[in-house]
Image (cartoon, rainbow, N blue to C red; front, top):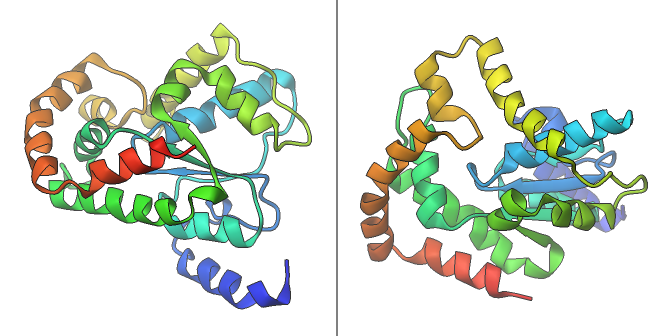
Length: 228
């Protein structure tokens, strides 16, 4: 860390003060893994935890789940390895709307605006991070581990089948432990569920029409994923 960076580091940290401290990038961070909600953020974290537990080792210290570009900016200032999750907005935004919040569905305008805000910044700093596209994370987690291991002093083992089952069970257990209702669990679990797939299918056409009229999210997705 240089003196030149200290004011910006302090400012970024202050702007993220409302986030859980352990989620915000710091000197102790090993990896920054960030993305728009519903882009496999929780799945990645859970898989790393499950693999680490199986190895009997401490989990790497990860800055994650703020879903805020300032955490990425902080990682750049602190010279940390940064990984950005990204999912096609035609899928990510309906899923985010369903996840909603405590008061129900999230308005499509807000769900789209937050996607654009996050990835607008990422597009500007494309050379500062490695990309973890949703299809890779959900279909080839060994490739994700290989990317992470290139930046870890103690590499993670390659995933095994039992790891996937354990990681998929963790969100349901957390939700139940928090006293979530069955309906809330269906809406919020970060794993594929038939009930939520039906809900998302009903939204997709509405979202498609909106994104056709407001194409910036789609443009950013194509720009970022096309970059080498």
